[in-house]
Image (cartoon, rainbow, N blue to C red; front, side, top):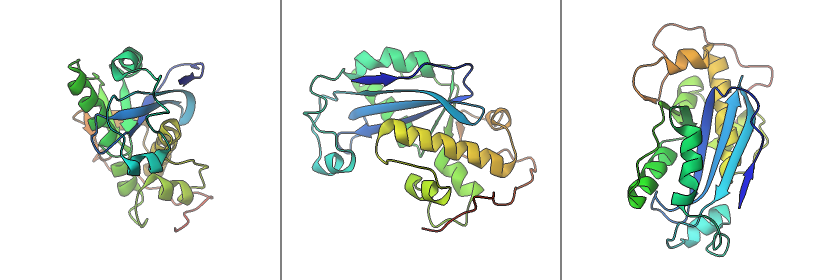
Length: 209
């Protein structure tokens, strides 16, 4: 039901992705958390979750997870201690605000305290600001543009790619994760306002869709 790698040293930020059983954000059926240090994924944890909710056919088609897949999986309340042990007090990122809302919704539905992260980074908004020339800023488009191997709609894979996008965006704007986290507020959707040099496209270049 769960998969974990061994942590290797301090973590700069965690990246979260969830899959849901239906359109309700609280219906989490899979969660993946990627650990990043020095711009690289150094660890990861993921788990199937039984949402005790209806599965929508569209969602099943999207991620391949159905009620039969999670019949013996832990509930949200059962995985929450692990999630909190990783994310409480930490810098957390996700691609769009969907995942942040899903964690909050699942906790609200279960009548338990929400995850108490220190900063939340929206990698989609940062990608829009780093590469406005791209046709869109969905993870598959970004993965193709930067030649990142990617299997979409698996929670840990999505988290990994979002974390790599964040690392590339920091390189593009020539700032550090520490400088980004110094931004005011606890929900980061842009880069610091201080002038910073924008790097030219890397040797890998950008490719269109």
